[in-house]
Image (cartoon, rainbow, N blue to C red; front, side):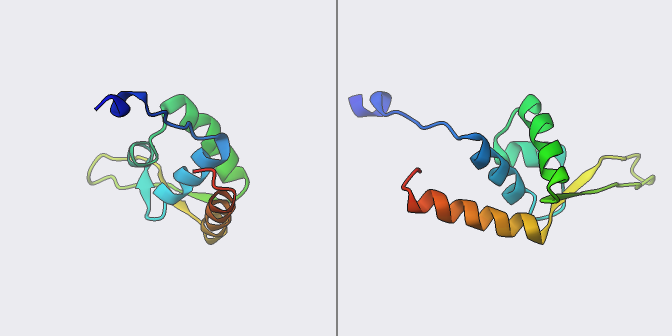
Length: 98
């Protein structure tokens, strides 16, 4: 039982966070769903989303559904982003970082 509280957890680095956001965006989703799935705070989201869109790893899909009074922006991972995520996973698995 004592081991339960002494075990260290490792923090994710910036690249892992970016990859988690892309993975969370495999299906078209809004910001809140992606933030929850990727386990990131709003400040982190804001800094990461610009970089991911700039590198064309995510695409922004505007939602103009006036029937539901919803104008939430949707995000979806691109094939380039998903390929990059697989490379990141391979690298981290090879260096036994996780």
